[in-house]
Length: 138
Image (cartoon, rainbow, N blue to C red; front, side, top):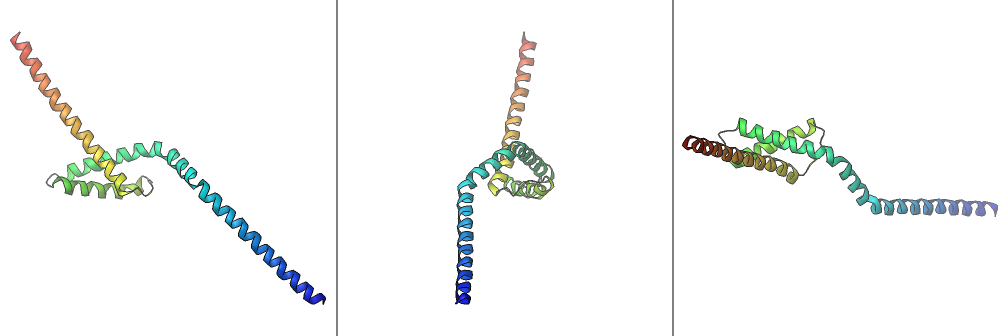
């Protein structure tokens, strides 16, 4: 009789331990799901300040590389080469796995900045010429 009681008690204890562990794991799983967006937002906020600057600089570096080395290629091929350069450089700068859209955005922003600077330089040059003509006619 005592043997049956001991065996039943042992099974009851193992079932209680199993249910306790299951409850604990379920609770932890719910808490992880609950705080996952908060943790992801915190990680994003804490790493983006320094990394955004680095990503912008790397986008500019990739753009300049493609423009300099592949002068004879068209725009789409240069973009492809700049994206490849950026992806190769990511591990060198210890950047996490950025999405294709983020990489392309960084390179295209560098292209737009360069384009606006060239447009500004042309306007400045034209302004200088106009100022010289006005000073010579006065």
